[in-house]
Length: 306
Image 1 (cartoon, one colour):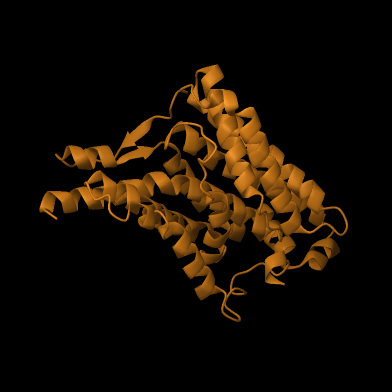
Image 2 (cartoon, helix red, strand yellow; image 1 turned 90 degrees about the vertical axis):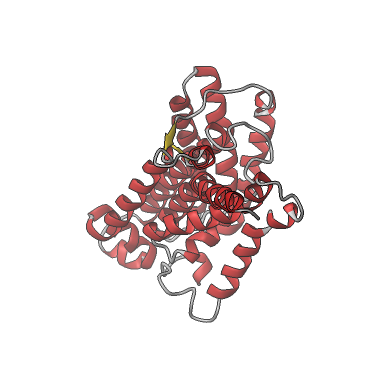
């Protein structure tokens, strides 16, 4: 490859990481908050898809992408609240309920979203980070989603809250020891329902970024399993909101390799490069699931850690 092609490739991967990583960031932060309270939500794939459809529809009918973002967050919170309420019932399993709600969320999105496949909705504004370069390729690649700074600030706030605030410490306490939480007079179910709902709202922002920025349209295959990958991403980040930022960008960069190769005219092996995020997920799970390794940083009450 020529020097210009190398520059274009690197710019495309970096730009792709910043674009593709945004949904990963919000979904992983939402799952991190949920799991910190001692509950796992495998239904986030359904939350992501349903909120993506709702955000697109809200932006299309209101004419404002920010109204769509709000509707996406509320939709994510609603479906996640249902998950939290169901999991609070005696004998209900978090994992089975999450899978059921994943199917419910995707099914509702596919059914209600059929009229939205063709229309175009207003898109979120882009933040230009490539002004320092004279290269049009670099400038085009570094058009960043306006939700990205919000996600980074949210990660910093969550990291601070878990260590410095009463609410954050209560979430961690509920995730580490339900008995200790009850002994202090707090409702474990109440904390977990609130955390799950808030996590769903955060994940809903990821859904909004899918349909209102990149790829910027609604279709039934828009998620490509990002909600499920986010669960592995949280494990990789060791339940740290700050580390979720780096992990999301890593997965975003992995997902951007195939489009980046195609952008410089290399189409051979395109579909093989599309598998990189999924191979990376499997690799991370294999590495982190060694005996004793998953427990590091894992909330003690988490279903998957028992």
